[in-house]
Image (cartoon, rainbow, N blue to C red; front, side, top):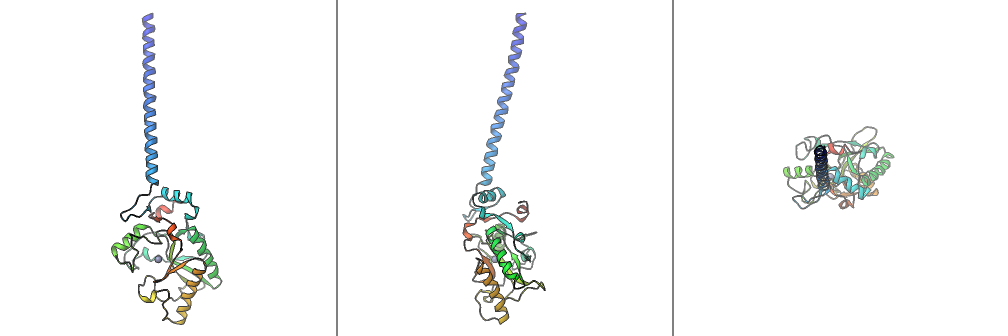
Length: 257
Ligand SMILES: [Zn+2]
């Protein structure tokens, strides 16, 4: 009998020991999983410098963290803010200075501050029977690098070692159109023309063209934008450097609420 009891005791001990070992293993796996999860999350939210020593946000976790710390960094769809906004995505076609398709299925995103300012611009323009036509707004950093590989000249493309206001969601390329006819207003040059005629203060122009350019630049400046000296179509927020460079594709941005 006593032997039996002893056997039973040993058997129970054996089960208990196994159970303990099992739960220890489970604990070990649980702790390891936690460490893995924390390190992955940290890695995702840690912004590392790129080959030019620039900090470029390249995933939604990093972007969301910057917005959590500063809500003014939110990227929003311009069409939700700007009445009568239309787009003409030159870089989604071969009809651009690189003669190559640079991105597909874009959408016009900018920081909320820029979107609210453009909303005021559009309201002012509506009174004049005019609307805004956007050629490019937020542009992923990879596209800026691609442009530079094709045309490595800072008179035509943004130097990736500096990045562009477009990569920060704080610059926009646009023109005016007539709300009744849908036609673009005549401007000094087409978009992405890199001659002196495209300079924002170029004066040797027909009166009607000069008037159109003045209308555009004035309304944009009155609502907080600055025009680039060499491009009548490029406008940016003066505080653009507060916004991080970003390299998140449009397909991923579209997942944002
Ligand atoms: Zn531009």
